Image 1 (cartoon, rainbow, N blue to C red):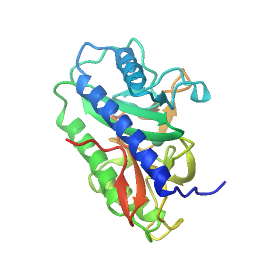
Image 2: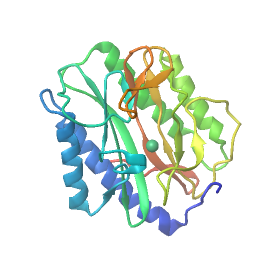
Image 3: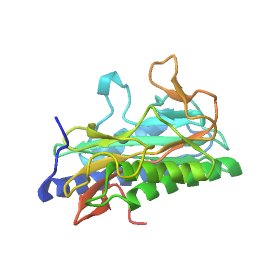
Length: 251
Ligand code: MG
């Protein structure tokens, strides 16, 4: 199918859905506290989606049973919300995507529940910084590999590994479009970035090795060695030559 370039009008729609995704995601992050269940977070997401007239991109996707992915501690992505109770010191990765007027937005973040360890704090900061480093080099005329390399070196310079099995992606009328955006690679490689491309960048960092495994529920991905992990994601557009974050919030 190839990379789909969006028109300025389509990017406008993606700005709107991106804002909805960001607003709901930050509300969810704000509400994470010890004693609440991951299922309660999903219920909030469902309620908020309805309020904005948007639909979940996850619910029913390949049979996924919820509107939000909630992954705790050594769980990396695709955690199914349910009865699990959040505890002081946990770190929680929230991955959330929604559709509005035919276009998707996708974003993720990792937050601490109450007081977290210095190592968990450093991991979260490195994952967030890796995403920022990737976005910083995304502009017209750069190569996709420049993003991958920037993310990888930022993470590895801080002593964390980057997951290989799950990668970022193009996004638009489909949640997953071409190209894949790996979190590892070499500068100067891969397709050229150009005006109208819309991408979800999503570094996933582990304290231990980069390998992952899938749990018995066939969805939840955990680190293979049980180490802590973190995940940050933004949907961006290459607009006016630069990376514009579509899933940012005004703070
Ligand atoms: Mg994504």
